[in-house]
Amino acid sequence: MEPKTALSPFDKDDADVILRSSDNVDFHVYKVVLRMVSGIFHDLFSIPQPLHPHPNDIHPERGIPLIPVPEDGKTLDCLLRLCYPTPDPEAVDDVDLLAAVFTAARKYDMEDAASRMKKSILQLGTDASLHERTIRIYAKAIQLGLEDVAHAAAHASTSWQTFNYVAELDNITAGALYRLLRFRRMHPERPQSFTFCHPGPDERPGTASVGVSTAESPASPKPVVASAIFNHPSADIIIRSSDNVDLRLSRTILTIASSVLAEMLSQPSFALTTTSLPESGRILHMLFQVAYPMEDPRVSDLDEAIALHDTAEKYKMSFAMDFARRAFLQCTHANPLRAYFIAMQRKWTPEARQAASQALFLQSDPWVPEMETSPASVYHQFLDYRTVYHKLVYEGSRRRMLFASQSKMQKAQHWSDLRLDKGDKSGYMADRLLTDIHTKVMPDLPAKGVEGVLAIAYSKELDSDGSMREKLLDADEKLATRLRDACNKVRIHPSTCRTHSIEQDASRYVHNACLTGVVSLAFIVTQTRRACSCRGPFHRGVSAAQCIHGRTIIKCFLLLRRVHLPQGHGAYR
Image (cartoon, rainbow, N blue to C red; front, side, top):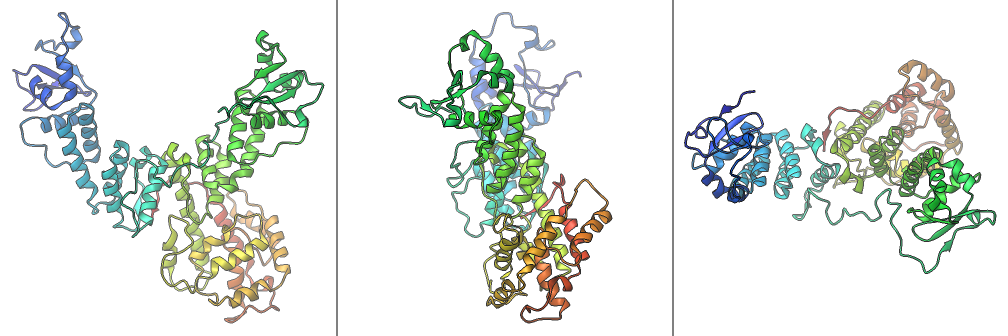
């Protein structure tokens, strides 16, 4: 594309330097102006120029220096008008252009231009009339490291109940999105010291980062011998860890288990009986325990599972990698949201789905270190997943349950915060009731988990004094066993789209009663009372299985369980 000359005043014949934009627009400018407004150009023009410059550095027609710059013509025009003794550019409400001009001004050390652009961005960020633009300003402020602009945009966003996810949020971290949502939830106790671009004082990792298995511990005075498992007298090699743990092993087993170790041990430098590896003793112990014909090791947490997987991958021990991923799945319940981010970073889809399904029932989202190394789009997928799930729960339960207002669902569209807002809580017994029953029926579920989601909708139909709670808990002891058996027999296959056939299979097992997942227990309580026309206490002599329309419950449950991680945008609180 042939270069074209910029508009006035950047087309003067007596200009002594030309700035060429990335889209081939030539700006004829004066060195003296650039030297005055830009520290970078001041230094550049102070450097002695070669007697015979390269032809590409000279304009072929004008014979003056030609400097290509990475900014496009629109950005460069706006930037130079801020520097020239001419009227400022017309009011700009293009967020991308403002950010590009500010970035260029800061790069070229144009303090005045950068300051004026920042004020323009700040002014747009404080205008709460345009929701999407304010959120876009927040995202740009995070990218540019403008803490005060991010704070202003976040504060402006509190004027609306929800906001839509915008594409610019994909360019910031999940941690920055988390802090925006947390700030909006903290009303009216929002501290002035709240930070957005970086984690705050209460968002510091309390443990080592995932996968750090090679950091050396302080050296012990003498080597520490491992457990009896790896202290057999027939061992012909000693593997010494970074923290001075000695593992007495068999070369033959190591050679068979790992092609990498086999190649290492075949080198002359490894002919000695003691060989050091950079991993910790704990991780090496678990790794070789998987390789040996013995009981599998106990993996205590996500960090150990990840460290074990990475070490197994390093030494090309695929069976140990598979074991580590299974161990990771077993550890997700302790911190499901963190497990979700770790799995998404590693593109472990099954593990991410399981972690997301467990994180659905957190009382509120905790900050996890992996948010700072994950894009906001990863958090966005989880938020959409939970929002869709909760809405389905709400819609499915609203038609079957007796409560006053649909507005109850508005309490937790984004956060699964079941502590409810301030005000009269005398009627909110559902979460406590469901907690007690679920620990009895499905003890392996996370505490305050599945049972809690419905507390948003299921509110005032239980006696506030707790009398019904006690009577319900004392009711038919066989209820728990009957319902647990029904749960175990119902299997949902997400890949199957034939809802009717799945429903038939489920109804064949469950008949007229089913407690599963999220909504069914509350259905049993409420539907039993409705079927019996009983507005008083739950009567011991009434069988729940005789009073529930089981197929309707199963249909709703199947609908809920078929939810996947969506890609679409959602409205967040």
